[in-house]
Each structure stands twice: as structure tokens, then as C-alpha cells.
Length: 296
Length: 115
Image (cartoon, rainbow over the protein chains, first blue to last red):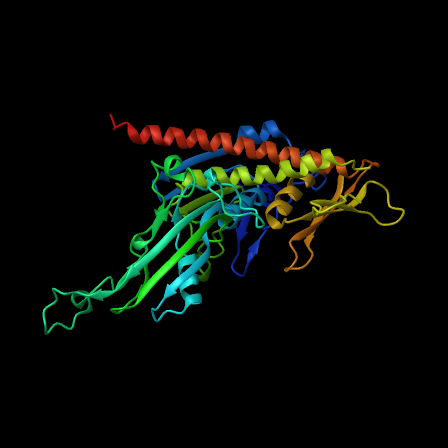
């Protein structure tokens, strides 16, 4: 059996799961809080103890352990992944013709949620004042008309057979290169990430003629991070009266399990890299602001 | 005040009570929230010269935080702020380097078939 941990050591390094609540949630290892401990920030010590273990990595998801870092910083990476990693998304929808039963505004909203496969690192943030240009905008077109299928059998009642183009999918969206984009992005064809998102249903004679502009923005739905693998923080054992005084449940305070799911635009490892760089950029921007302006 | 003249909105402002010394300052950080607020607070709290450090989000509909620092021994509050930002940047750099190294190792191991 492992040697019992001293009370102070436990408060410092463990989050305790009790029967009726969670104890020692907050970080307390700050200078002056514990006599006999030197809790001053020590970069060398951090670098020695910090560890990352990649458990799983493929095109769409990854899982890794981050150990030896405070929850505040690990959580900052998680928050940035969720809300601040830039993506290309449909921002403006110009509807030239829409005779379908889907209202213009509903259609525009549906289009706005379709993830677009384009590397956001290759685009600039768009200045709201200026005209759209090749460095900040992707132009997409959706032009489709439904008609009767002349080869359908007379007594058929199946829309699949009766009509042509009656289901409009994301794969019907076409990229219209502007400026030099056709050359620059020749290898990486820009299109929706998924081909099978149903946008609208049409009947013969109905048509859609739409131009969309995608710009770089900080999407709120880029990736998803959850901090649990196998460990569901179950406290079931504490419901059994014969066991509850024999066990103590704790979680190591500085061990985080990251699960990152990408929407398919960028691989998950690139998303994490981008997220770390976003936090670095925040620090840098305030540092240069402090240097440029006299703080006195 | 740090507010710059002209068209651009300020990124960082300093607010001090009348007669307060340089060691007690509230920094207004625009376009920031818990993401930078909490991680920066952790780094600054690790500084033994800092007596108090905390932040608040002024209102859910405003995108700024009030970041308060009080120091010990008459040290100007901008010093721990600057150190904290530098250290947080350094921490991120180390996390980034470690992450990329581990990911590269993982990819190489995946490409090689098992012996």
C-alpha cells in the first residue's frame, strides 16, 4: 500500500470527491499560503514536471493527457478551442432567386451553419469597410433547378424517381475562385466538409440561385473538448454504507485528459497548436501595448 | 489613462483611486474574459511580490475585464503584470514545443509498422 499522504500534501495536490460534494476544488499553492513550501513560480520546475502523452490521433479526433499544468491554463486552451480558433464560415448570402418553400432568411441561416473546408490560416480577417477581395473572402455559388424526370414510369409516386434535383445537398455548392485563388488553392479544392447536408427540397419549376461570401471568423462550433476518459468521476461507491468509510476518492489536480473533435476543416493537432498560439498572441498584444505606451 | 487619442479603441487602460500608490491598480483589459483573466491571474498569484490579484467580468454584455493587482513593498503593479504576461507566454511556448514533439513522435510511430 502506498504511504499515506500528509493532509497538507493532499489539499495541495488532490481534488477530493466526497459523498455530498467536491472538496479542495481551488488551487491554493500560492506563495505565502503554506509555511515551508516555496510556491513562487519556477519555470525550470514547470518544464521538468510538464508532460504530454498522445493517446490517439486521426484526421478528425485526438486524445492526449496534459500533466503538470494548472487548471486555469489548461482551461484557457479548452475555452480557446471551443470559441476562438478561427474558421472560414459563410457570412453573407445573396439570394438572387428562391422559389422554394424555404423562406430566404431560413435558407440563409441553414447555409451559414455549413462547415467549409478551407484553411483559415491562408486568409486574413476581413475589414468590414472594404470590398471583398481574394485575401479575405471565398465566393460560393448554389444554382439549382428542379424538373420532372422524363424517364420516370407513369404510375410512379416516388419523388426520387419522379423529379430531378429535388433534394438540394451541400455537395451542390460550387466554389467560384476570385482573383488568383484558382492558382493559389489549386491543390486544396475549397468545398463543404460534408457532401450530404440537406439544404432544401424542391418541386418541378422551383429553383435556387444564391451567391455566398465566406470570411474568416472565430466560430463558436469548431471543436469540442471534454475532460473525461474512463474516469467519469463516479461516486457510486459512496452510496454503499459498508464501503464508504473505507475509501477516499480523489483526482490528481494537475492531470487533464483532452479529447478534441474537429469539424473536419483542420486536423485536431493543428487546432490545438492554433489554440496555444491564440493564447500566446493575447499575451503578446498586451505586452506590446504596455511597451508602446508610457505606463507612468 | 492609457487611452489613445483618435479612432482606435483602447486595448488596455489603467484605473487608480485618487491618492492610491502605483502598487494598487485596476487594469481594464478589453475584449478579454476568463480565458486570459484566469490563466494570467494564476501566473501573477505565483509572484511573491503580489499581495492581491483578482479579476471580474464587468457585465455579460460588455467584453472587458477589470484586472486588479496590489503589490507588496511599493513595487509598481505594472511589473507583476508584465512578468505574468511574459511567463504565461513562456509557458505556452513550452506547451507548444512539447505538444508538437509528442505529436511528431506519435505520427512516426504510426507510420512504422510494428516490429
